[in-house]
Structure formats: C-alpha cells, structure tokens
Length: 176
Image (cartoon, rainbow, N blue to C red; front, side, top):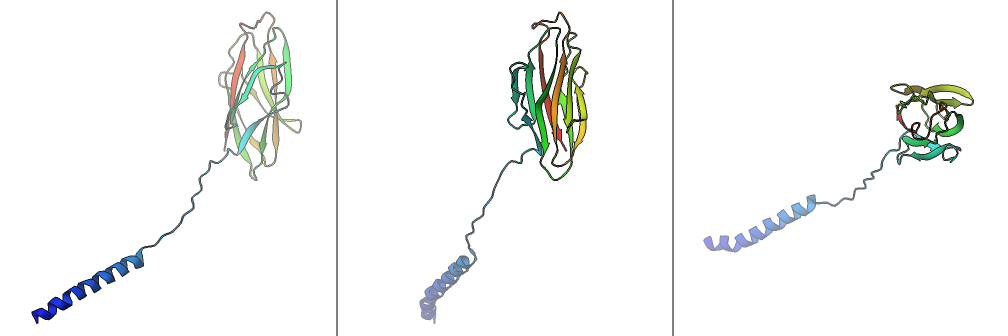
C-alpha cells in the first residue's frame, strides 16, 4: 500500500499543480485603459484689441500665456491726455453668466492725475477701473455671449517728463 501511494502521489501532485495553474490563469486578465489629461482653459480670457500694440500709445504690451492678465507700458506725453479705444476685449463664450473681478497695479505718481479704464458693451459703460486709487479693482457681471471692450484714459500734467511719469501697469482677471 505504501508502494501504491508513491505511484499515485506524483500524479496527485501534478494534478493539483495543474489545477492551481488553471485557477491562476482563470483569474488573471489583461485590460487596456485610456486616460486623457488636459488643462481646462479659463472661462474668459483677455484678447488684444485693435490698439493694443499701437506704438503711438504703448511702449510695450503683453498678454500672459494663460490670457488672464496683461502688462503694458504707456508712452508718457507731458501735459497731454489720451483716450485710446479698443485696447483689450473680454468675451464670455460660455452658456452661463460670469462674475468678473479686475485688479490693477496702483499708479502712484503725482504727475498722472488720471489713469482709468472704461469697459463698454455696445457703447454702454459696464464699469470703470481707476489705477490712481490705492487698490484699483472692480467687479461686474458678464452675460453669456457678450464682449466688453476696454478703453483707457490717461492724463499727465504739464512739466511731467519721461523720467518722472513712467506708466507701467498690470491688470489681472479673476472669473467665477
């Protein structure tokens, strides 16, 4: 009987190993998964207007890579004023109304009494932003499929020269 067990034991072990491998193979599977990653664009972005790079008014003008802010330097003209239309546009291509906050760099220069943006939609004033204030900011609502156009008004006093009346600024956008 001991002899019989020895003969059957290798067969039994081989059968058990075979069943074990078959069970393992039965629960192992391969699958393919597709994962897509992408950045979401801001819901609204600045777009350069027709006068954004006009060398008569701007020494430099640059919209950030993510289009949520822009920086510019205005060419100072002592004792002169300027009103420049269509510098920047902001369009809401979304299906929902957006709440927009604009924050700017304060212009603290006694030779620049006026430095103000006027935002219009179909020639109606939506809001203004005055850079001569200590904390220039404004908040407004932009309905779906609407565009606001930015115009800037700057006044420099007589006697202001290019060394004491530089006008560099940044305007940034926050949308909710």
